[in-house]
Image 1 (cartoon, rainbow, N blue to C red):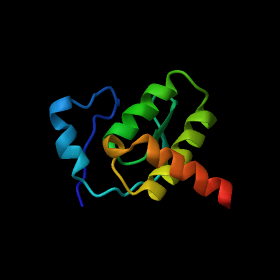
Image 2 (image 1 turned 60 degrees about the vertical axis):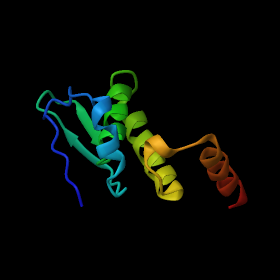
Image 3 (image 1 turned 135 degrees about the vertical axis):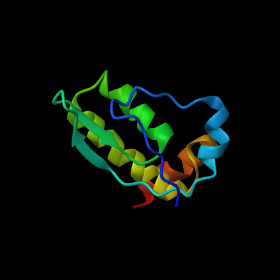
Length: 102
């Protein structure tokens, strides 16, 4: 398993040159919630691209909305069993059909 160490302030971005390296990692997601020294909530999934998205979302949404989005992303990617850059519209349609069949 790979471990990616990220800066504590979460301001780092994923460089396109690293996308191939990131997409070769096994997909193991875990929702983790912590609090920054400033008191703000930090939500991570353990995948650099998804964590960057959650950081982006945190600047625009309420903390509970970010946490809900993290859980939704985890459910989707556990269903799809693909890396974020490999997801297609077909995967999204299959997921929606799966939810409707339950």
